[in-house]
Amino acid sequence: MYCTPLFRLVPLFVLFLTLLATNAMAVQPLRGPAHHRTVAPFNPCVAWVARLPNLKRPLCDAAALRITEGRSVQGRMLYARDVIAPDAKLRVLVVGAMHGDELSSASVALHWIQQAMQTPANAHWRFIPVLNPDGLLARPARRTNARGVDLNRNFPTPNWERDAKAYWEQRTRKDPRRWPGRTPLSEPESRFLHEEMARFEPHLIVSIHAPYGVLDFDGPGVPPPQLGRLYLDQVGIFPGSLGHYGGVHQGMPVVTVELPNAFRTPLDAEMRQMWLDLQRWMAERLRP
Image (cartoon, rainbow, N blue to C red; front, top):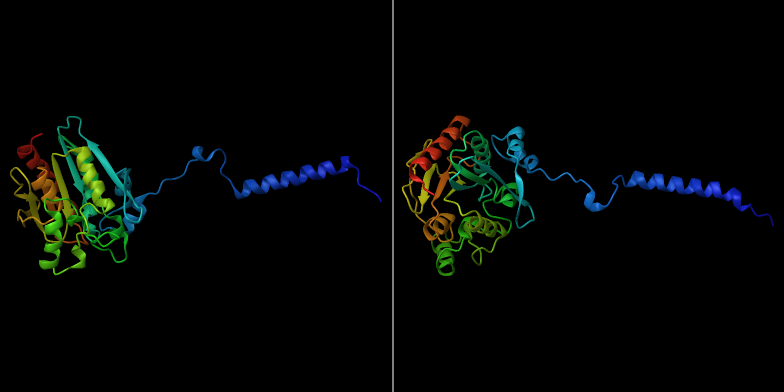
């Protein structure tokens, strides 16, 4: 029986190995160890621009948001941006879209990042434009997070276990949009904000909501009489709310901005005037 000499098989074997390696590289173009590979990070602006009113991609990209350690119930990342004035004496925390269906609140927070970069006053600003991304990106958008909890009723105010459920049952008639959760800080989004308050120790919290068209204030000090066309109308405190917890219980003044419309922002000039009024009040009334 005739056998092919071994020296004639070697070139064919080399060719086979070359073709195999070429095909493997075509299927797997990444080279080097996995921890050295560059992976493009997810840009939240792609989803937000498609969802939020009066938000253009350049403005959102210019916000240069950073990824925080916070995550939503469904695993979405929570983003923040710090803008620090050279002579910063105050720390101010600005929170948008605690309620996912108040879309304009996130847009205003992003517009204010641009204003802060231009006129930061004497503050270290920390913006969290979207605290409830699961609610905001749901279809349709919903007030609560993915577990059906109203984040603005989930903070650990005194006697929460007694008052929060009773208020929900008696005053809201078990409105599912205002369910406070089973325990305070049961939700990852509210826990993240709670921890951020402890880390950042803000002198002021600005929480942006909609659609009541008023200005609310909780905590020590003299409240701002108006921001733009929004006038002070203090609506009281609620079990588990950020204003009650931060302003009354923790002594951190909380300005709650209630925009007139949840699906449309004020005009750009009006948003700027609100920003200037906030800075003026801070300069006159807020002390480190």
